[in-house]
Image 1 (tube, helix red, strand yellow):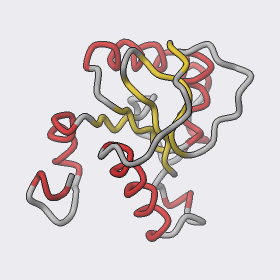
Image 2 (tube, rainbow, N blue to C red):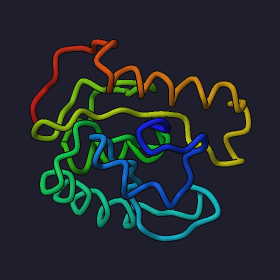
Image 3 (cartoon, rainbow, N blue to C red):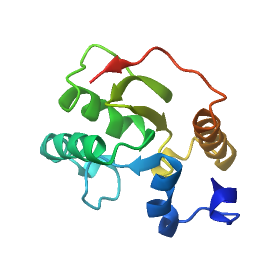
Length: 141
């Protein structure tokens, strides 16, 4: 992806261009917060259905969620899946043709993931996009 954008480092200003590579980085709640503890259930109850609509409309090849804390309520509220404990990486669920992928949240509150760990997860995501990683059979949503 960095090569396709002709940059060595991806920055926030590159977010919009990433859709052209088939990837959408996402957060479920569109409200600034210092960390997840500042968000409540109503934030996710509002944000999850909106994100589902947005994913159906924009249809990226993969949607990347920053952290399980964001993905869990999306899974329950938008996709109505409550009996599965998701893990990092490629998810079984899809939205239309969009695969779902979860990486560690890069927040300082998640400091137990080192920069090398975080980079490795982005590399896994890039490998998946390049077609070199296969995942479980998708469950349609």
